[in-house]
Image 1 (tube, rainbow, N blue to C red):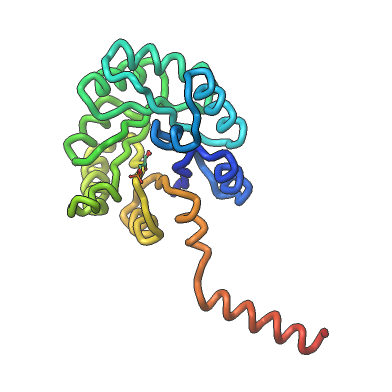
Image 2: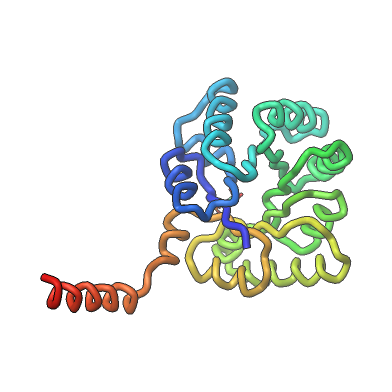
Length: 218
Ligand code: E4P
């Protein structure tokens, strides 16, 4: 399973990269705004800074919502760095744009996916990644993980190569259950990844080992 970090914060991205487990980065306009990045030039510079930190794919989301605008923006975004994946919303013009990008070898991430039907369309259009939002579905009383399982089943039935990128992952159980279902990728905040490290028996076991070592070795 690939781990992507869902942030535009450079120090968190560096920390995840330094951990040696990072496969890529996802961003969105809200995450960019959270870092106070504004103005096209600054936004593009920030994407470049992210790309320089990591070895994997970096999703950069288009702001345009019309076909022509999405194409223009996407074609500009991919000039920033070869790691850029054009993140396109699941709307009619977005699906058309994904087909356009796919036919030209440009990687895409179809975002804001909340149903199996939307995921099927994204795969038909040839998206590189499809991003179903687990946490946001849970927030409205739906079962986000059930959607991941449904998409996995549909993609397996037809051998679609679109990778399932579980998004809006809020806690470690989301991540672990996504791995059990067989999602290709999970994107989440750094805190979710580092929480995987924690187990009380690891902490107490290590404390005992070190204390016993000290008793003998001083
Ligand atoms: C994914 O690409 C999205 O940016 C992200 O996972 C959304 O997560 P949120 O629902 O926690 O904002």
